[in-house]
Image (cartoon, rainbow, N blue to C red; front, side, top):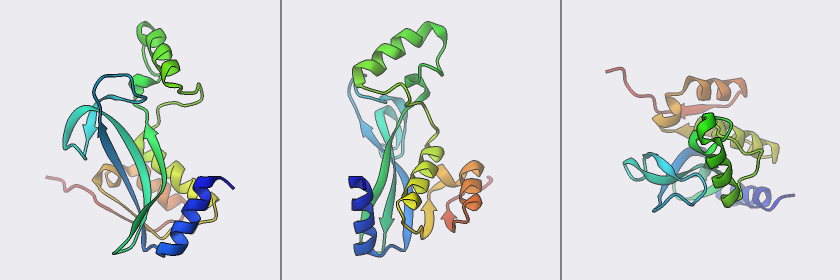
Length: 161
């Protein structure tokens, strides 16, 4: 069994979670050399900034929290299949320098979250209530994916006004 799967199982065993929290975190960066760095919105920073963004699923109680799974968000500008022909060779070169494999492509944050939830369940973990802020809750595809899996969830949805 993979190390992350063992750590996740142990964390759930010790913490006894009441929820899995889906969120993302921005990491401010100088320059453009780090994998996935781009000018993008970061809730952590509260603005659009040059940063990397990681998406994660944490197991939580009222007194404890532990990350169970995480992914680096790869913006479209880092996906040579998503950019125009004029930028493709530049993106391929940048990906190669950062060691990003050919199979790694841009995926929306909500889909990275669903991928991780599926992986956690595949590791034999039982999902408690899934919680997320409006960055995920406003996305109908995210909510539909949770419903299709029969998962309970409480997510923030912005008001209409």
